[in-house]
Image (cartoon, rainbow over all chains, first blue to last red; front, side, top):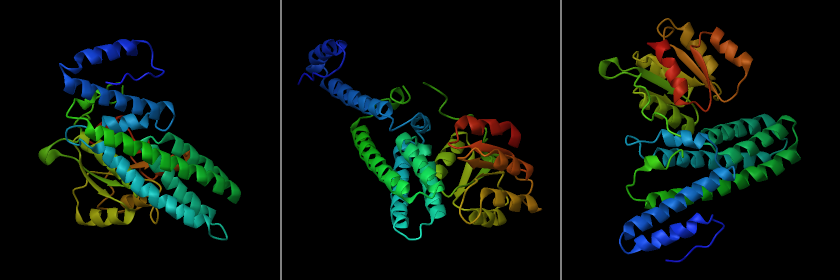
Length: 180
Length: 136
C-alpha cells in the first residue's frame, strides 16, 4: 500500500500504520475506509472552496430509504436544466439589439436552481450577471457570462466525480456521511 | 449536524391524507418541494404551470392545499392565487406562495389577496412544518 505523503497532519502517519496493520486481516474494511476518506475529502474541498454551501446538506437530509438517490437525481435535473439555460443565454447574448429582460429571466431561473442545490459559486456569478443586466451593460454581461459558464462546467465535473465515487461505495450506513 | 429526516407526518394517512398541489416551472424546485412534502406524509401532485394547475383543479376537487412559485412564465403564482380566490369552488383552498426574492410589496400583495403564507426559497422542511397547524 503506497504511503501517501501530503500536507495531512502528523496523526495520519499513525493512521497509515494502522491501515497497514489491518490490511491483511480486514482488506474490505481498509478499502471501504479509503474510499470513504476520499469521498469525505472531496466533499470537504467542495465546501471549503465555496462550490457548495449549506443548502447541499439540506438535499442530503431529504435522502433516505424511500428516496435513496435523491441528491444525485436532483443534481442531474439541475444540470439538465442549467445546460439548456446556458445555451439559451449564449444564443440570446448574440442578438442585436440586446433583450436584457429576456436575459434576466433566463438568469433568474438559473440562479434559482443553483440556489436550490447549494451551488454557491454559480449563484454568485449569476447575481453578478443580473447586476450587469440591470444596468444594460452588454460587455459586463458577456464577461460575467464567461464566468458563469466556467463555474457551471467545473461544478459539473466535480459533482460527476463525486457521485461516481459515491456509487462505488458499498452498502455502508450513509447517514454517517451527510451533514458532518 | 443531525436533524429529523422523516418530516413530522403532518400530511396524515389513508383517507385523511392531505393532498397538496405543487406548482413550479423549475423541475429542480418541483423535485425539492415534492420530497419535502412527501417526507411529511402529504400526498403530492406537481405541475409546471398555473394553467395546468387550474385544469387539474377543475377536474379534481380533492386538493387540500396549493403551494405555488411566484415567478412563472405566462401565469404568475399571484395570478393563480387570484383565480383560485375568485372561484366559488376553489376559494376555500389555502394557497401558499414561494419565491426566491424577498420583496415586501410582493409578500404583502399576496397576503392581501388571501395567500395563507409566503415562503422564501430554498424552502426548508421547517417552513412546511410551520404550515401544519394552519391547514388542518
